[in-house]
Image (cartoon, rainbow, N blue to C red; front, side, top):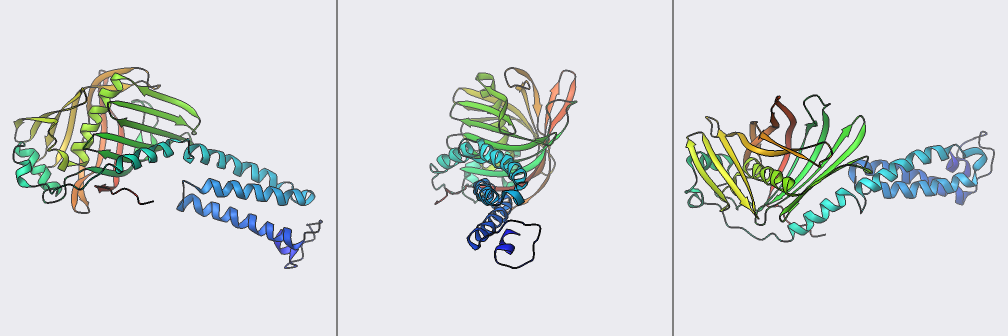
Length: 353
């Protein structure tokens, strides 16, 4: 409206103050910046808030010059400013997202070319594991050095807790095992962000409410042990081609069941893998994985399993597309995690930016 009045494009008697053409241009600039910020929410979620911040500043300047007519626009700017603040806290340089991206970039810089996985490489594995790797399509392709997985699902903190929907992005690296997992969830319409970081011998799990209030800060030996089991589970579920790792020892129980242990930097994960008649991994069961309290300060060890189903093609590889996380608590087992895989990439190359 300010632009229209400045250039005489419309009769606007409700605007009582004169607006010169330079100020009319500035009104137009403010409107375009808000439009770009709205588009940026979808096409550039990391940086939309920077455009919105500039839009608020320009908007408030022109409001100030037409205060009598436009002062109520300040309330709209204040509302947008709340979104800008959240965008900065959740996506800005001090956020979990920025830390996740920095870790990923550093790990990707260490990647090197890998040889093809051959039948000779898997010959010493149990027959069920060999069949699973072939079914995945890993034989004849480059050995797995890293993976990137995107998924969505729902999660809860206990058997009676409310389910929270979430989206997640995860990178796993296998030469020097590391795991980086970033999750965005919603609890009672309030955003929740969690960052699992396992680099070197130590793992952490941090959770923030609305990118401000720290809800969980889990770390220490029990966290390291629990995340070692998770990391081994990821390897078996998402990267069958990496099951030739010399840090894994195998013991076949029968044609469908294999016991395995994975040792890395002083931590050992033990599990029993069950394969179905088609040769697909159907379940991964580990005893003694630590379940953290709601604040992440204490852990209770219990059986943990991840039943898997709905195998399908992801490019050249065939993998499960739906999984669960189940705690076998003394009071009865319950599912706390349900997820569906959206995309998976192998041997991701470092960005050239």
